[in-house]
Amino acid sequence: MFRVLVTRAARVSAPTNRNALVSFSRYAHSLQFATVEAEEVSGSRPAEVLNLVQGKWVGSSNCNTIVDPLNGDSFIKVAEVDEAGIQPFVESLSSCPKHGLHNPFKAPERYLMLGDVTTKAAHMLLLPKVSDFFTRLIQRVSPKSYQQAQGEVYVTQKFLENFCGDQVRFLARSFAVPGNHLGQQSHGFRWPYGPVAIITPFNFPLEIPVLQLMGALYMGNKPVLKVDSKVSIAMEQMLRLLHNCGLPAEDVDFINSDGKAMNKLLLEANPRMTLFTGSSRVAEKLAGDLKGRIKLEDAGFDWKILGPDVHQEDYIAWVCDQDAYACSGQKCSAQSLLFVHENWSKTSLISKLKDLAERRKLADLTIGPVLTVTTETMLEHVNKLLEIPGSKLLFGGRPLEDHSIPSIYGAIKPTAVYVPLEEIVKDKNYELVTKEIFGPFQIVTDYKSSQLSIVLDALGESACPFNCCCSF
Image (cartoon, rainbow, N blue to C red; front, side, top):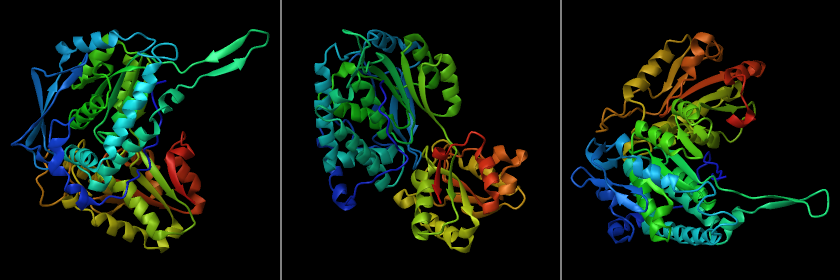
């Protein structure tokens, strides 16, 4: 088992003195592992992202130029591997046996080595100048508020703290069961897969790949890691930090490529397990191509239900705003559909939600670029929803103003559209209403106690209570 399961639904942000941390940014060049200065990455000083294979950092004849999501400047050059260049990665994965780089019988000292690496890495991320470096780097490639970006670093640091020292080998704890006669016992061991692959998305460029990568390494696997090229610089710098903390360079391969090249690599290297976080369309293709040797965390349309008990109105409004619009709605746990009991209609919940949403601004990145959906696509979706009888725009529904976000990305104000419950469940509307928009957008509807069965129908026949956030 190479994945350590964690919950990312609730983001925890450490208390931060932002002004104190800013002063450290000018010392980023003094970080031994860093090859860039986060705040100086720009069109005039573009950064370069390399690949790591068989223990060596290598470039490529192909260069993918990443544009700054805030102003459109070409500010990062990613050395991408094409289909003709995957052979070194195939050979590297193939060199790892199916019993892994270590297991309970082979090289058990590596459990302690990885515990030591984790201890040093956790300490490094605790340093304000290192935390600020990664926070700023995340903001440059996946724009979000300082608090949100720093929260990602904080969660990563806390994860590493959990596996310091002996905790890695304790994670590999085995079991024994007595047999039914003298001399018979059944033993079970936490065993690695061996060669594995990890593919991660853009929205949490540090937290997701670090947590999944370290879980793979702890159990003795050799991973090839692919992060969305738009944000891969954050993980490239993190790998350099891990090497500086003692991680053998040969333990992880890091590849930048497009989908076709990565798909070919998976088919030729034939990793024994792949962990994919991303779109459901790609997930379905990979599940077929890899014949089921894959673990998926794909896209989702998430809902929240406010029950008949009205309490803590300010807090509920704040939670709804955070869940729908933090990180510009680009979270796998983002609130897509809000069911509001009629008792809440007598309160000022929606107006408070509107006020909170309208406080968000581009200046502090509490609202920002949407990296996978254009402005036109989102506004077109809003207009289609408003054609449904009884629908109305609660707030938003307009492009951001006075910005230089390139047109390949989306830029709209936090938006909410009311759609009557009776209309949502109609066959002609259901697919439109439940279309996932990975941006600052949500549907709001209301219901009566007598309509609870309709709410359940709207959630779908396979609805499970654990797929939603309820306040009853």
